[in-house]
Image 1 (cartoon, rainbow, N blue to C red):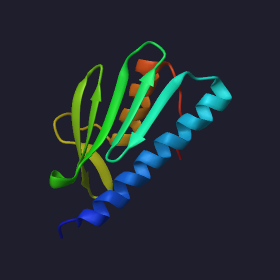
Image 2 (cartoon, rainbow, N blue to C red):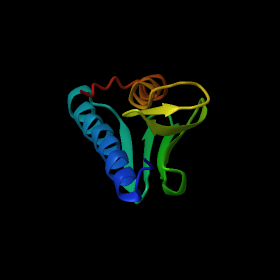
Image 3 (cartoon, rainbow, N blue to C red):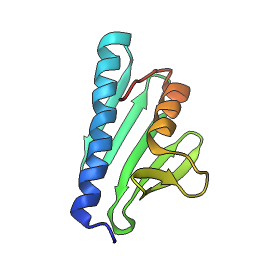
Image 4 (tube, helix red, strand yellow):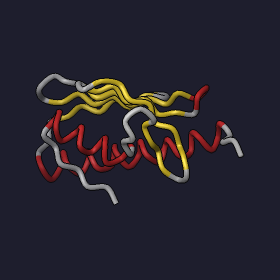
Length: 110
C-alpha cells in the first residue's frame, strides 16, 4: 500500500526532530558549534568548519534527500526503514556518521 503524504510527513518529521534534539544535547554537553536552520521541508546544519549538511523532504517522491560534503543521497521508506537505494545506507546511522565526519560531533539517537 502506498504511503500517504501525511504519513510521509509524520515519519520524516520524527527523524528531523530526533536529529535536532540530539544536536541540541550535543551543543549543551559537547560544546558543539553547529547552526541549525529548520524551516519548512528543510533541516540545514552548518558546522564550525563551514561545511553544511542539508536534509530535505521530497514530498512528490516520498523521499528524504541528504546533501553532504560526500555527495547526495536519496532515502525511501521501505519495510519500516529509510534506505538509500543507490548505496544501501540506512538513514539515521548514515546521518550520524556524516555529522561526526563533517562536524566532529558524536550524536546518540535511540
